[in-house]
Length: 505
Image 1 (tube, rainbow, N blue to C red):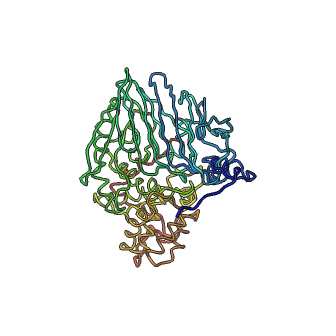
Image 2 (image 1 turned 90 degrees about the vertical axis):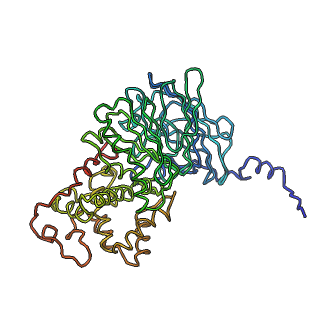
Image 3 (image 1 turned 135 degrees about the vertical axis):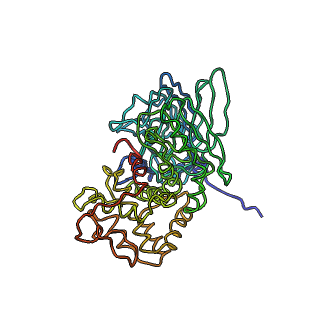
């Protein structure tokens, strides 16, 4: 039997507008998510589910024109909300109606919709804009990298501001459609799967789709002239790699490294579980920077990563991030160890695989190479501070911490943790305390001492990460003189990745 729905005129209007009858609770969303390292990054009051980014880019002049459509849900009664963005905005619409907007701070776009948004309601936000991204500097830098034939957007912890408005914090992940119109003869590289290309009067549009949740800093864009390589992994996963046509002496070494992506994805799956995305690959543009970045499904590599020859170790590092950092993303930037410690440890595992030094030997080498008064030990990988977010200690001491965990719980439980964590937390966000709790659940052990000693103590641990029941080598024992450690064969290649992930180090 149908029941008649009887509502008052005021209530009906309230339902139609998707706002409560009483609007006294409406208030502006926060201008940042409150991250302890970057308080103004991200925004409060809503969550994004999808970005649809349509751009037109002219490489010769670096002129970018775009319309980004954002699908979001209000998490409070909103009178106003912010996006993070740096280019000039000409129009904003919210749910089809013109909205007023203003800018403040370094990257805040303040939007006041014509009608406030009720908690739980959905919003469609359309932002039209244009500008010359390379001329825009925020906090003294730009993440928009000009190349001889175009440009690249890649950077951590921020890069979105220079090409699309967003809620720019990894705690708010979304799916992406990126469609870019460029002059014929140019190509566009982005995340996910190339959904199609169309031509129109001397221009070509490239449309990319990433259908799994992605943090905004992991979205990437490259325009230029590339040699493209497409294939599948042995298990059938599509692989898409691209190389600038003018890489010079680094071209062959780059190819010899990045073309192993499919093989390495399948190898890493043995440790971390099923690959979490629908494609894999990387690109090497002709940029003057030295870093690499785990941009989701399409890793960004600087050609300088291959200046000394091929380096599969850096490819292993960035691909490991597809599980540790991309699929399972940090909840706040102080949790950076969950990204970098495990990506570095993947390099240790690759070294074992290649018979160039075991993970234990590498951990011992890191420990013995830094005397107690080395500032290296003052950086806490579990909370390094914004100024040390990409310090070597986060990577190297962070990996040693993982070896210490391995020794504490034993190989069987350790590898269950290593694979189970990215499987259980797939497409989500996490903190270090949550990882510790998971490791304790799987191992059945209390691990507070291990985590405190290796991640949160600003001094050199008294004893290195020796296996359970083993005597510490002389060079690792408390009070011993610093013996010269034997350098594992893989160490130099591992250290060549030390410029990841930012030239702002």
